[in-house]
Length: 251
Image (tube, rainbow, N blue to C red; front, side):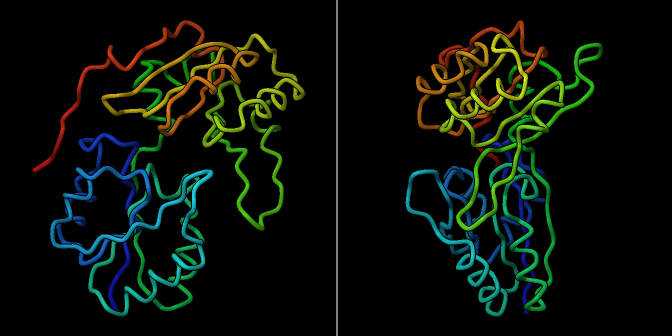
């Protein structure tokens, strides 16, 4: 029986992968990867079979139960199995379901952290999510509800925190803005929407909760994260052409 590694690929920039992640990719026999993993990152696993099992909103995706089974089956065949997840595996990555399925099957599993999108966005903005005197609390939330899951009220956490990082919320921007305002957030609260955080083509648009639907409607097709709170009040918009290219590859 092999071992399965749940590896965080980070927010997109290849040079933000951890050293441990690159070593595991180089040694992997098979890699099950999310939809948003760049080809340059997959190229770090030259000897591995690559299997796409990603999920994207509005597109056909692999069911979680099937992914769990594929991981268990792979561990019976291969020595080193990598499950490569965007961002950090333990942040809205459904890692616990995979960990539990592997543990139930008697498969050893190890988690390798990655940089989550909110921290990459904070770095791109050059704004601390916990700026002294402005923000003492941060909430990481998502309005996304998986098929068959109970409805969870994310708005209470979003209303209580000084700074809010909203994952997978741009596609529901109208409902997100309405829910935040209903929970007491002023419509004039500053908002920054970061698309393709950490990547050379990242784009930052800024506005308020009231204008969030307009910001979201104008975005491209890349993954987007929303940061809300006073920490982004003085952030300037950043078009893709203003971004300095990052390291293209690790070899």
